[in-house]
Image (cartoon, rainbow, N blue to C red):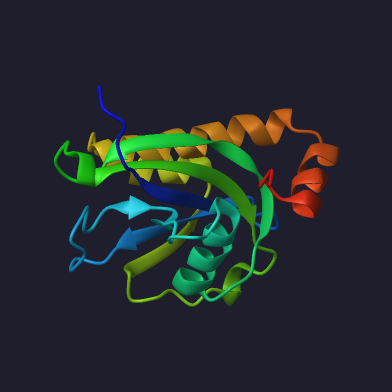
Length: 165
């Protein structure tokens, strides 16, 4: 297999500690990929940009707010469309927190926003669509890691970020 090129991406699952709810966003119907599906903040890493800078930039662009990094939830790999090298994306997904859930200003990239508990999100995401299964898995991982992560670990991520260099 030859060495390929990938699109770098990020996912930011926004969580309100005050509400203990997650923000789900519905992609605008005019999006070229996965229009109308529910997701977290997602985006591409620009050339010369690290995952952490891309994470905070995408949240700012899509919601108009600054968030705190809570922890890395995991990595992701998928094809943004047909399984062709030019559509292959690898990314990092993080849990971020927002103290004031009323402060968001949803961009035109999304047609709706909802703050939901994990249970409410699972009910909303009844579809078996690949994207619905993906965001369900992200929320499931966030629920598990919030339980397992001690406050010192979350404070470490907030203070030191996720980039190693």
